[in-house]
Amino acid sequence: MSWSQPSSWILSLLAPTPLAIAVTLIVAVVTPLILHFIIYRSRSTTSLPSFLLLGPSNSGKTSLMTLFERGLPATTHTSQRPLAVEVSLPVTTGAASSKYRSVNDPTSQVHKRFLLIDTPGHGKLRHYALENLIKPQYLRGIIFVADAANVSPGSNGLKESAEYLHDVLLTLQRRATRSKTLRAPSEISVLIAANKLDLFTALPATLVKIALEKEITSVRTSRSKGLLDSGIAMNDADSGDDKDWLGDGREGSFEFSQLEEANITVTVEGGNVTGDGANVTKWWDWIGSIL
Image (tube, rainbow, N blue to C red; front, side, top):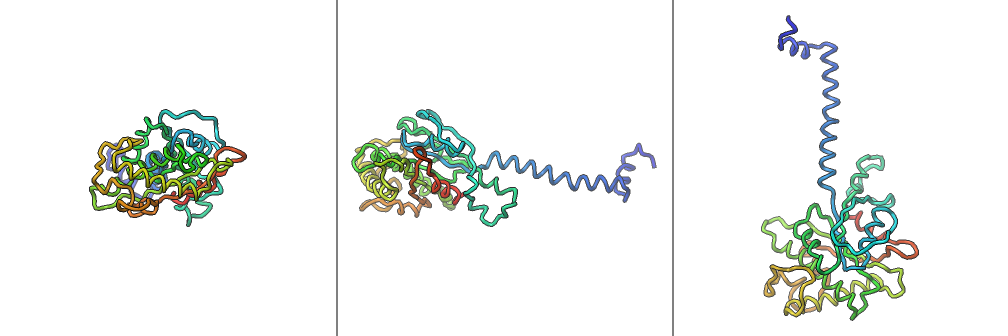
């Protein structure tokens, strides 16, 4: 048999020779490793879950982002554009998807990683947030940061926070009720992070929730009458459409629980980014519960 002929090489590889056995073992071991490397790298770079960071200016969003990313809050300035950073849950916080994984499973750390997207809080720049809400990419949750020391009843801070939060929740509700497919949009979790609880004038999380619900009731009534301009663009709004009325019906008080029919769950938790030691444990736990 001539080795110059292609058929002779094929026959020699198929024969039970040491060379054929060695080639087979190399292919069997190397091929899965290469496929795993390619698939893992592609998924980890394109499908990392994301959380959108929203809230009025000076509420502490960017400080929270730097705290999550670096472990310490940094001096910040007013954001002009969105900024995304990769963050991992701390060692003390586990991801819900890893509940039944072994502590020695090397993939456990992968499920603790996510993207945190900080958006500008100024009224004229909130379209960046709206774009992320309308066309979410792997959006897992929304963190709305509110200054708990500046949401007392009748304050401008409460009014601004309520108006912005109203528009955000209404956009999410529209996304669910105006879906053109039979399949409902996936559930979106919203955390209202009542920040700056270390300050003496700050309201506890329960009172922040009550104050926001009451103020949103006033906002949606005023919006339905066309008395207030939206804090973020609502170009397709129809005042006569129930889908443009946040929550249930057109009477009574607004409550966050009314949004559960649209697959939107709202949680209010308190904490502080700066001050005498940061306290964001409840916020970490919330993120871990939906990762």
